[in-house]
Image 1: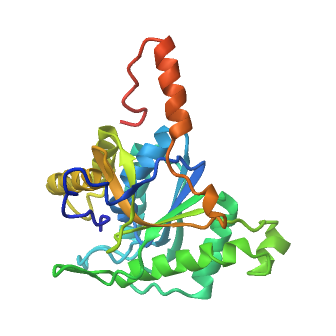
Image 2: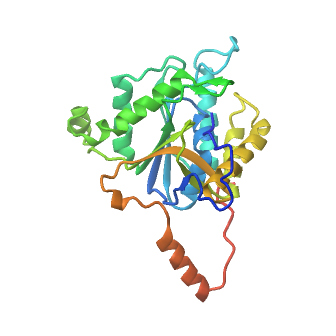
Image 3: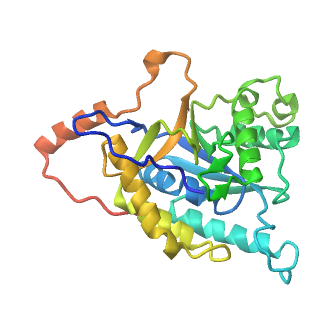
Length: 290
């Protein structure tokens, strides 16, 4: 389910309703329940960040094997197909690290075992930013009840981020036996939220890469039918944040000092302006990923 976009424009002259997040994380990890969840939730943002130097990774908590009502598909076969689809989808975003924890699809719970596995992954990847689903969002209007696996994965991800991944005494065997040092995630983005408060700016190529990624999940849906809605949502969110296109999230910055919280790129922008005064502008490549 895609992150909710605001539904109305700000009045003329008013400040944008959504704060703009322009910082590019060094590393970002998306934690979701099923194959294809990442591409609804964060594909366009991963595309934008990876194009600008971020190292992206995707974690699927379940194996996705319950994603069909066709009884003729043998157990395990759908999971194999869906994981291959997710690998191809990730390639459109420039992401080559896709991990599946392999929990059974459809019955996921926020257990200590799930949290431990996520803590292990967070300490291995050491992301600056984590994107996951907002576990507090139970409903989407009148048309959709949020999948319990989505909520369980989001809850487990948040519990892993804080406090377990940062605390050496949480799951001490990870440090003792594997040498995995504690890690503090700074930024947390909750997608599919009823209360978004920040927006990540996108270029048109990022929306194209998102649609290409969604198009790989042929066992689940026809992505072509979603294009109009995806484009409309990105434009609406962009208008609410003062840019052309954007994706919205509920946002947390876990740095303890509020004076360190700055998400715009003024220094880089000023340097670019100075450089443009010296050198003629050259067109940027669209993307390396297609």
